[in-house]
Image (cartoon, rainbow, N blue to C red; front, side):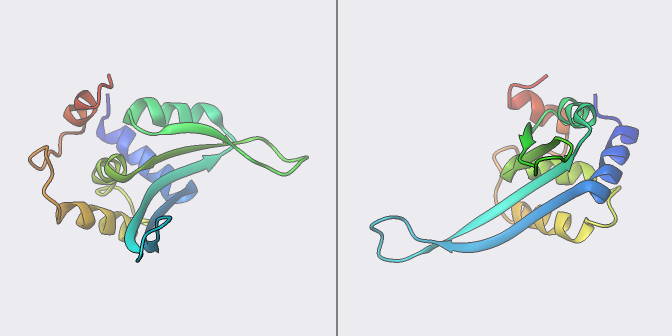
Length: 135
């Protein structure tokens, strides 16, 4: 269950250890005559504490936790990551509590707010997770 304390903790963790990618680039498919715009929208948190990232995954109900490649002699790192529509809903949860990454979070929210969403502008994160087949 995602309560305001958990959302605030995740936002603080995200402000300190997280990364927001929101950029557009041109991509050309093999054999295509011209390139087309493509968006990279991604949220991630990388750290050495696996248990915290598993808690983030279970609390939010979206994303994945995978090992990160590290240099020999360094501690093993883990990365929680979510993309696109999942990132939009996580941004809506983090927005009231975020400070450092707030500008990028707002850009992602505005990006998806301009589009007509099938969920009739759902803000209820629990409802979104149930539609995705999560807890």
